[in-house]
Image 1 (spheres, one colour):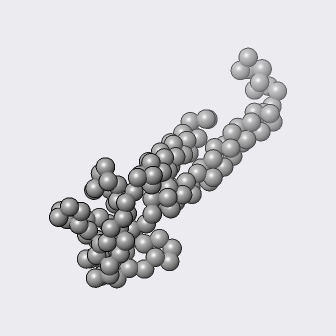
Image 2: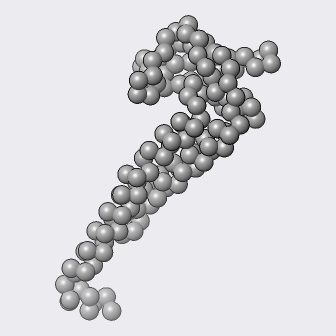
Length: 134
Protein backbone atom coordinates (compact mmCIF):
# COMPACT_ATOMS: atom_id res chain seq x y z
CA UNK A 1 0.00 0.00 0.00
CA UNK A 2 2.96 2.34 0.34
CA UNK A 3 3.09 2.46 -3.48
CA UNK A 4 0.17 4.89 -3.15
CA UNK A 5 2.62 7.46 -1.78
CA UNK A 6 4.91 7.20 -4.83
CA UNK A 7 3.21 10.04 -6.80
CA UNK A 8 3.43 12.27 -3.71
CA UNK A 9 7.12 11.43 -3.27
CA UNK A 10 7.89 11.97 -6.96
CA UNK A 11 6.05 15.31 -6.91
CA UNK A 12 7.98 16.37 -3.83
CA UNK A 13 11.31 15.47 -5.45
CA UNK A 14 10.43 17.41 -8.62
CA UNK A 15 9.39 20.49 -6.62
CA UNK A 16 12.54 20.42 -4.53
CA UNK A 17 14.67 20.00 -7.67
CA UNK A 18 12.94 22.99 -9.31
CA UNK A 19 13.50 25.02 -6.13
CA UNK A 20 17.18 24.09 -6.07
CA UNK A 21 17.67 24.87 -9.78
CA UNK A 22 16.02 28.27 -9.45
CA UNK A 23 18.06 29.06 -6.32
CA UNK A 24 21.28 28.34 -8.24
CA UNK A 25 20.19 30.62 -11.10
CA UNK A 26 19.12 33.30 -8.59
CA UNK A 27 22.70 33.54 -7.33
CA UNK A 28 24.01 34.50 -10.75
CA UNK A 29 20.97 36.03 -12.47
CA UNK A 30 21.28 39.25 -14.38
CA UNK A 31 18.68 41.64 -15.71
CA UNK A 32 18.01 43.48 -18.93
CA UNK A 33 15.09 45.19 -20.62
CA UNK A 34 12.75 43.28 -22.86
CA UNK A 35 9.49 43.82 -24.70
CA UNK A 36 6.24 41.88 -24.61
CA UNK A 37 5.44 41.00 -28.23
CA UNK A 38 2.48 38.60 -28.07
CA UNK A 39 -0.30 37.39 -25.79
CA UNK A 40 -1.91 33.96 -26.07
CA UNK A 41 -5.17 34.04 -24.06
CA UNK A 42 -6.07 30.49 -25.11
CA UNK A 43 -2.79 29.13 -23.72
CA UNK A 44 -3.08 30.03 -20.01
CA UNK A 45 -2.96 33.72 -20.99
CA UNK A 46 0.80 33.48 -21.52
CA UNK A 47 2.92 36.30 -22.88
CA UNK A 48 5.89 36.13 -25.24
CA UNK A 49 8.78 38.51 -24.75
CA UNK A 50 12.10 39.27 -26.42
CA UNK A 51 15.34 40.73 -25.15
CA UNK A 52 18.80 41.40 -26.54
CA UNK A 53 22.15 40.35 -25.12
CA UNK A 54 25.36 41.10 -27.07
CA UNK A 55 23.42 42.01 -30.24
CA UNK A 56 21.61 38.66 -30.23
CA UNK A 57 17.84 38.39 -29.69
CA UNK A 58 16.39 35.85 -27.26
CA UNK A 59 12.77 35.12 -26.43
CA UNK A 60 10.78 33.54 -23.66
CA UNK A 61 7.29 32.95 -22.35
CA UNK A 62 5.68 33.96 -19.08
CA UNK A 63 2.34 32.96 -17.59
CA UNK A 64 1.13 35.72 -15.25
CA UNK A 65 0.98 34.78 -11.58
CA UNK A 66 -1.46 36.36 -9.13
CA UNK A 67 -1.59 40.11 -9.79
CA UNK A 68 1.00 40.27 -12.60
CA UNK A 69 -0.37 42.13 -15.59
CA UNK A 70 1.35 42.57 -18.92
CA UNK A 71 0.38 44.27 -22.17
CA UNK A 72 1.70 43.80 -25.67
CA UNK A 73 4.40 46.41 -26.32
CA UNK A 74 5.19 46.85 -22.62
CA UNK A 75 8.86 47.19 -21.67
CA UNK A 76 9.65 44.71 -18.91
CA UNK A 77 12.60 43.63 -16.78
CA UNK A 78 13.90 40.24 -17.91
CA UNK A 79 15.83 38.06 -15.47
CA UNK A 80 18.16 35.64 -17.21
CA UNK A 81 20.83 33.07 -16.51
CA UNK A 82 24.17 34.31 -17.92
CA UNK A 83 25.29 30.67 -18.30
CA UNK A 84 22.19 29.79 -20.34
CA UNK A 85 20.70 32.80 -22.09
CA UNK A 86 17.69 30.72 -23.17
CA UNK A 87 16.73 30.41 -19.50
CA UNK A 88 14.86 33.63 -18.67
CA UNK A 89 11.80 34.89 -16.84
CA UNK A 90 9.93 38.07 -16.08
CA UNK A 91 10.10 37.26 -12.37
CA UNK A 92 13.12 37.21 -10.09
CA UNK A 93 14.47 33.66 -9.73
CA UNK A 94 14.32 33.97 -5.94
CA UNK A 95 10.56 34.33 -6.22
CA UNK A 96 10.39 31.49 -8.75
CA UNK A 97 12.22 29.22 -6.33
CA UNK A 98 9.67 29.90 -3.60
CA UNK A 99 6.83 29.28 -6.05
CA UNK A 100 8.34 25.87 -6.81
CA UNK A 101 8.16 24.94 -3.12
CA UNK A 102 4.52 25.92 -2.67
CA UNK A 103 3.02 22.44 -3.34
CA UNK A 104 5.50 20.64 -1.06
CA UNK A 105 3.49 20.97 2.20
CA UNK A 106 0.42 19.48 0.50
CA UNK A 107 2.48 16.64 -0.97
CA UNK A 108 4.09 15.85 2.39
CA UNK A 109 0.65 15.95 4.02
CA UNK A 110 -0.52 13.39 1.44
CA UNK A 111 2.40 11.10 2.30
CA UNK A 112 1.68 11.43 6.03
CA UNK A 113 -2.03 10.85 5.52
CA UNK A 114 -1.42 7.59 3.65
CA UNK A 115 1.15 6.45 6.24
CA UNK A 116 -1.24 7.17 9.13
CA UNK A 117 -4.10 5.50 7.28
CA UNK A 118 -2.03 2.34 6.79
CA UNK A 119 -0.88 2.41 10.43
CA UNK A 120 -4.43 2.79 11.79
CA UNK A 121 -5.79 0.18 9.42
CA UNK A 122 -3.20 -2.39 10.53
CA UNK A 123 -3.76 -1.68 14.22
CA UNK A 124 -7.50 -2.17 13.90
CA UNK A 125 -7.26 -5.31 11.73
CA UNK A 126 -9.06 -8.33 13.25
CA UNK A 127 -6.88 -10.82 15.15
CA UNK A 128 -7.83 -13.61 12.74
CA UNK A 129 -6.28 -11.82 9.77
CA UNK A 130 -3.11 -11.22 11.82
CA UNK A 131 -2.79 -14.94 12.53
CA UNK A 132 -3.19 -15.87 8.88
CA UNK A 133 -0.36 -13.55 7.85
CA UNK A 134 2.05 -15.07 10.39
